[in-house]
Length: 167
Figure 1 (cartoon, rainbow, N blue to C red):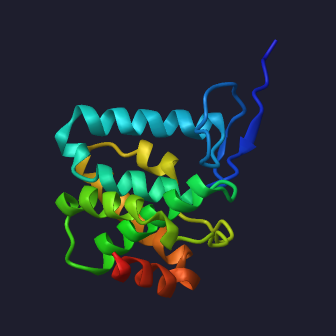
Figure 2 (cartoon, rainbow, N blue to C red; figure 1 turned 180 degrees about the horizontal axis):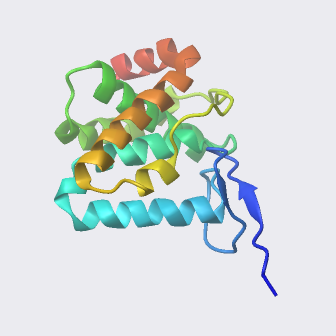
Figure 3 (tube, rainbow, N blue to C red; figure 1 turned 135 degrees about the horizontal axis):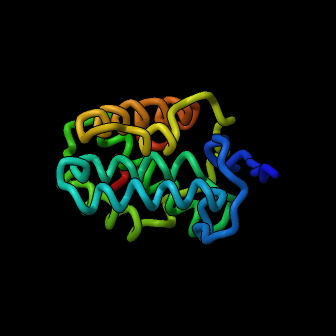
């Protein structure tokens, strides 16, 4: 007899994952299957510098693709990651400056407000990153993913740029 596995759409990225029990993030909006795949991608990035060169982008893209529900912590987190994407994609800030900018964002959390998340669109997800066959493909997919996710938030770009300028 064949066992049928059930699947669910992740509430954040809308990708299809096995409906499994397991840990999730306490405020990001991801199902257990998505959170598990994200953990595997992070483990790959932490264990191999060739993959880790885009780690900061992976964290930013995943976070803003899984915004969760409005709460002070979620508002701050999404604001920090959106600013980080803006700086990485539209300015000369490099990955070395990302931790400093994120610290300044956290210290100025009163700056942020809830931004209504965009409707999920057919863009890359953590599944596409997980499926990369080598470090170069991984980095290329993460960069494309960041651009796609950033564009999804385009109606809020002016506010995000203002937040970044205030820092």
